[in-house]
Structures are given as structure tokens and as C-alpha cells.
Amino acid sequence: MAIKRRTKKRPAESGGAVVQIRSKESHPFGMLDNYVPLSRGEVKLYRAIREAVPVVDAAIIKLIRLTGGFTVSCGSKETERELNDFLQRVNCGRGQRGIHAFLDAYLDSLITCGRAVGEIVLTGRRDDIAALLCGNVADIEIREGVTPIDVEICSAYEGAHPKPLPYQELLMFTPFNAEADSPYGVSLLRSMPFMTEILLKIYNSLGINWDRAGNVRFAVVYKPQGDGIDRAYARERAEQIAREWSSAMQSSKNGSGRDFVAVGDVEIKVIGADNQILDSEVPVRQILEQLVARTGIPPFMLGLSWSTTERMSSEQANVISAEITAIRRLLTPVIEKICIMWLNLHGADRKVEVVWDDISLRDAQEQAHAETYLAQAEYYRAQATRSMGQTNNEGSDKNEDQQGRDDGGEQERID
Image (cartoon, rainbow, N blue to C red; front, side, top):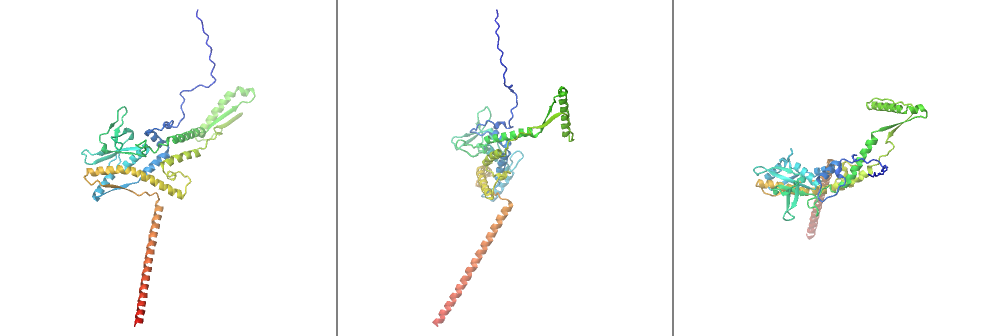
């Protein structure tokens, strides 16, 4: 005889149902969440930071633009002219010409990724430089050679052992802010992911709140009266009110005004009008201050109207000048290597010097005023020198006349 077991019915759970396929509300740059700093810079992460925060992107572009131009100086004037002409016309790929286009891409990779790699492409006969190309640092691996002084650039292919590229003498590699534990450079954006994540959460929340509260929605509440007839037809009247309200809103959307008339106890409220959106000015400014401070660009150059003084602006200009000088020190060996390669291929003297343009952060009016003051000072200095010369000459003449008179009186006494 089979024994039937009675199963106890499980009590109904009091909690709500768990939805598994609900979309997670987050900002579009999801890789900035749960970021763990690594010893090696994540190129995609840093590119996402530049794309997500326009201030950071603008600061890097301004650093590249403020680096300025340069000329090269050689022992021979003819060789110098030909070398400068080559630098102005060299092919840099992707429809660009001139070494400045190459250096812009090279410096962009250097600041963003913490390292940059370039290649000197020779002609088929290997008697001249055909092009200068900037490579993607994600496609290479850096490995120490026999000694820490030597560096080998290897190709990085997924699933394969990195192999050194065959012509190392044609490759250029520069680290940015090399450290003891990161000898191959660290990105300028290394300390930004945490602050950027908070900033994007604030902006994403603002967008959601404005989408909910800014796009006005109405709640139309119909309250039936106490009599039986009103209660009996409450549903029909509510549906009629909904149709008329929807028709009135549609007419307003199309540009024509239409009134809404209802009989009975009808209440209309704006959904979300009573909720207050948190003030984001103070936290956003605090985060932007941290991000801008890391770039070294003065806030007024990025369009941020923060409090400043003339003295403070002058000091900030000196700071950015020091930053530009440091960047130029990183680019000078790259330029010299390109120039020396060109001189070797043309059988010229390898002596070359990179002469950078002067760093000037003043506008044209202030620069003109400074030149005027210098000219006035030079003029008054010349006038003072001339006056002193005339005074000395007059004193010498007076001394000579007095000496002559004294000699004549002495002669008369002798006679």
C-alpha cells in the first residue's frame, strides 16, 4: 500500500518579485566603473576618459597646440635649408604632411597612453626617408634588452609570443613620466578614473532627473461623489476624462490651444514638481578642479570662469611655460633622430640642433605694450648717457681753461 506524503504548502513570500532582465541605469562609459589601477596603462580606459569628459580632452589638445613649432640648425646653410624643407614636406600618412602633423599624433599618444612609438619609413632604394608614421601602442610590447639601457620594441599579437621587430634603428619610442616601477611611462590620466567615475554618475543622474521632471507629466485624479449614480458611472466618466485630456495635450503639441472642461471633483497635478533636484554645482566644481590641476592647464584657458587675479594669471602662465618646456625635452630626441637619419642618408654632417620657438602666452596688445616700454627705456637710457658725456666734456673744458689761467698768472709773477 502506497503511503501518500502530504507536502506542506510553502507560505507566500511577502517580498516583491525579482526581475532578472531589468536594464541597469548607468552612464554610457561603463568601463569606468569598478576600475582597479594596474601597473600598465589601459589605453581603452584612457580614451574613454577623454571621450567622456570634454575638459580633459580640451586640456590635452591645448597642451599639444601650445608646444609650438621649431627649426633645425646645421653647420652648412645649404644642408640646413634642405633639411627644413624636408621636415615641412615629409609624408605622415592619412593625407597629412609635415613633421608637425607627426609630432601632434605622437604627443597625443604620449600624453594619453603614457608612451608613444613611431617609425621612419625608407624608400625602396633606402636612400631617403619616405614617411614618418605614428604607431598604436596597443600593438607593441616593450622589453628590456641585454641591459636596462637597451630597449626592444616587439610586436604584440594575441596568442603569440612577442617577437622583436627586425629594424629597431628605424623605430622611435618615448615614455612619459617614467618611474622606477613603471620605466616605460605612465599616462597623464592615470589618477583620473576614480574622479571621472563620480563626475559621470552626477551627470548621468542629472540627465535622468531632468528626463523625468523636465518632461512634464500630469496626474489627473477624478474623485466620485457620494451619490449612487456617480459611483455607478465612475469608470465611464474616468475614461471620458482621460480621452479628453489626451486630446487636449495632443492639440497643444501640434501648436493649437484647447481647453479641458470636466464636471465633478477633478484634480490635476504635475508629476515630479514637488521633488527638488540636488544642487550639483559644488561637487562638480570640486571634481573639475582635481582634473584640471592634473593637466597643468590654467582654468581660464579652458573657459572656466573661476576667481583669479592678474598676479595669479601671471603665475599660472609661468607654470604652463614650465610644462611646455618639459614636453619639448621629450620630443627633442625624436626630432634629432629623424634629422640625423636624414643627414646620414644624404652624406652630410650629423651635427644638428633643434631650435624651438619662444613660448609666449601674452596677447598681441600686451606684447606690443612690453615692446613699447622697452623702447622707451632704451631711449631714456641713451639720453642719460649722452647727457653724462656732455657734462664730462664741459667739466674737462673748464678744467683746461682754469689750468691755462693758472699757468698765465704763474708766468706773470715770474716775469
